[in-house]
Length: 80
Image (cartoon, rainbow, N blue to C red; front, side, top):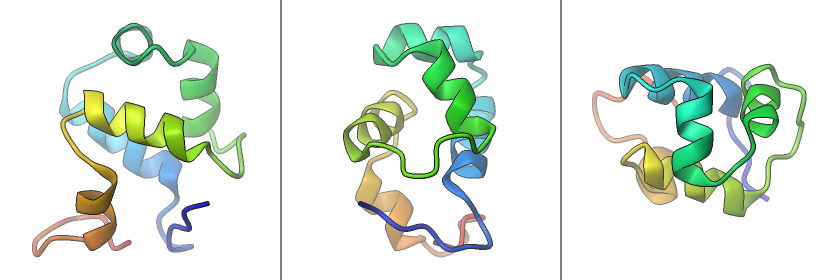
């Protein structure tokens, strides 16, 4: 399981990245193969421990990989 800092939940990261790419939830669901309701539940913090496999799939569609997001490159707005 991957832990994100308390001050920035995975839901916020997902929402920010999805909006940055200009995708709707249904579009992201179609591209990633992950259900719309799962994405909605992630963004609304209804799933406490997201599947690492689903996180990786979503990040891949959004143009990121898990390591890049966790490393917090200089200038990133996500302090993970």
